[in-house]
Image 1 (cartoon, rainbow, N blue to C red):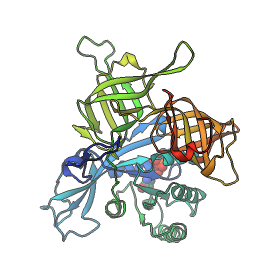
Image 2: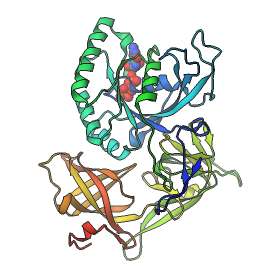
Image 3: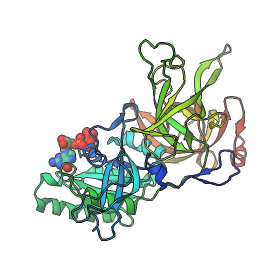
Image 4: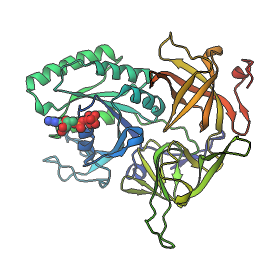
Length: 453
Ligand SMILES: Nc1nc2c(ncn2[C@@H]2O[C@H](COP(=O)(O)OP(=O)(O)OP(=O)(O)O)[C@@H](O)[C@H]2O)c(=O)[nH]1
């Protein structure tokens, strides 16, 4: 790790190299979303490239994860794309090349990737993309070769990716083993033409078969060359909790009780074993006056895992991280802390009860109305809020959240209830707010609005 110093409150002194062999040997440092309509072959492709029988599914988030290491033969004469190869996350760092004629050559680990299988329902996918970018650096858009092309969903997915600013896309025509070569070629040409019209710049279009492991090397080469590594600002650690699991035994004997294990995604910063942590909002309750009271939860990290790899520290953009703690399981019921934020003691983002947000409506003619109830998707949490003030200068809106939310300046999804279904209507950008302690953190342009903050 390289050290440098920074002054801002949320910055700390650690900068890391996302290609450092010591890091990518054990943990992914790049997240790639896998998108496509139901049954197009998303999970089969991820299983093939990650050498996994099953993906790690997070049912509450409609997401599934698996990690792969991508290598390249160190012999320059080994021909591309076959000089590239993907293995599971547990593979050694410099295995021998498998290509005939190069079997004495070592391969170099270039990337450790976390593949995230995304939901195919646009109503779930869009909020997820809005809150996950920039945690997702690129996308594999899967198109089933058996289906006639273009399909409406392909246009919808491309529009969604454009709306959230995800530009690094690789298109995969899958299942090419299951149709005649001439049909596959015709459809491939149709996909290429369509993509050229829809995407500014070139997005590679590749034919693959996950079942026959055909052309996976090509995908590896394009991932290495086309999807850039994330640019992380160096900040205090912040984890979105996806799951909290009590791993204590049914009848633990003294000394045998294990604490709660958290599973989540490290959005920024570095977490270390033995570090003291705080979880916010923690236990949310009402005091004797009926006012909301939040009691943060404190604990210590005793282990960190990325799939089966044990870590001494974890860096962001690394898929799912499992965080073992000494937290007494009786403090929380299973999964009751889902949606909360885990970080360094005293350095969690502020806890807001009212927030001022810049709003980008997805359709111009739609407006938010005063008093309206909306749903906010903020990372792994979903919170109901009421619009207290609408249509401020520059599209600023003020919202009162039903339960306190731990957040920094970030973007999130805003949905409206239409006929008993939450429909995404806007992207929100956090600009300031009032904390549960009554502190008003608003930039000057919001103070100037003259609202009763
Ligand atoms: N012949 C062939 N079949 C494939 C290939 N990839 C996937 N399939 C089959 O396509 C079907 C759907 O594959 P999945 O990987 O479950 O598709 P998915 O997109 O993850 O599906 P959902 O999770 O339901 O959205 C399964 O029966 C797979 O066996 C392939 O490369 N070749």
